[in-house]
Length: 626
Image 1 (cartoon, rainbow, N blue to C red):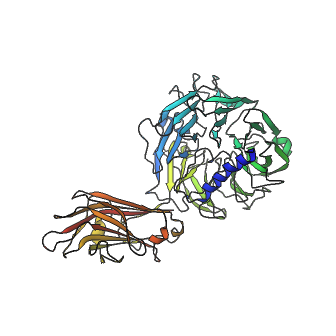
Image 2 (cartoon, rainbow, N blue to C red):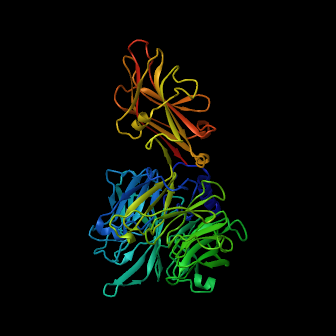
Image 3 (cartoon, helix red, strand yellow):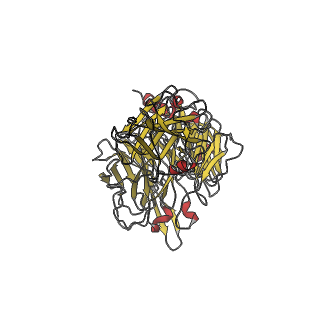
């Protein structure tokens, strides 16, 4: 298979994933994949997140709040992973539940060494690869690279890369599409603690073979740079790793370790590019000559206020830069990795969020969206259709937080970061976001990990209203043939009794022979949300029993022509849950008035004498997942 075909297989898999309405696909490394696309087909919140379902988790001790989470989180196999300044890897479920057992995993040899952890980890083949970024504060050399079992939290291998005390590993880890290699760079940094002046010296780029996770070995000798690498992650394009450095240089290296091409960006663009502190991203959709050619995109800065976004031709078959195909656009100080989608480049800077034409880099939005200082890289959901992408950026500015921007450049919603120590600067959010299954995840300097969601929760927490109703009390047959039985509406007091899962019930028993006790619930789905719903989850809590017959109850959902069973349980007089889900043919379950109808029926009939059918509802809810 040719190098180009190998590349196209990887990109095709990414595109297939992007068009499917997945319920929680992976975001396993920085900007999702080996070319740092930042694109997912998963949904994400496009209205202000539902705080009932969103969550925050505090991960660090108070002493380490200044740089708690400064690397992007990743999502792998239904879990969120984040590294903290204490040198720990945390694991949470998508709903924010902390993993137990070995989690969190400590990957710092000396716990007294306080480190900035800037390297976003990568997940591959069942393992999380983590770098101890290091800092000038560490007192002894220690292991730098760790392979951690993603399920158990067991460290299966640890590698000492260098014994030099002043080395920091501050680039994200890139895992190749074939799952055989990881790449990352280093920077040697010293600080004069009298003047607090930091000097950035040299550094190296590394490639390690992870085919045998218990024996991680170098793939080639480190590629040395006299200026080092800071935040500059490698894009893996076919057989080539492409990355920039502190002096504005770009290099393309073959997996054999040989340098294929190297350019000085300042020479290419005719001005002082300064430092490349973004990762490289790649798109093969912007073609200048043939199918073997695409473009790389990156940013730089050459002072505290100046910087640009760049496009440069790249031949994915030969690994060579095409310097004749180049353009740039001043955007201000930038460490943001550009994201390409549908002929556009989205990129952040000290001036805000830009949208540029991918061919010319001319602005599509006349002015950047003002969201504060964006050092992070845009994460983009394409779930809502072509031309309706939503862009998520975190801000490294006062109060930090996250912004959702639509493809027209309008801020749809924004949320500030949570902080606990009354220092608003601790809420800065430097690293950027990850998207999976309707949620967006990000951290802040205080070490708070956020999971924001716009799943809509329908329940009776504020009583009945125009979007929900409840009815009582008996039906025959079970289930009934129509979706309007039973048809006696709950009283105000009965609504109040099912407002929360608190052991207070709306209770009824039968009075007619051959009838079964029942409760019916109707929830009206928001019209704007209806087209995007990919799952309906229902949960009922209560008691259901018969004086002498079958205990328990059955949960149904109306499918347009009849009731479909979701769950049943033969519990007796103890409180229990009935839970069900629909993830296909969603339109069948939402009628023309946008109503979803739920029914719970006790499992046996009234015998016409003294043996009644009973149903007591404590709490019922419906969750619509966009």
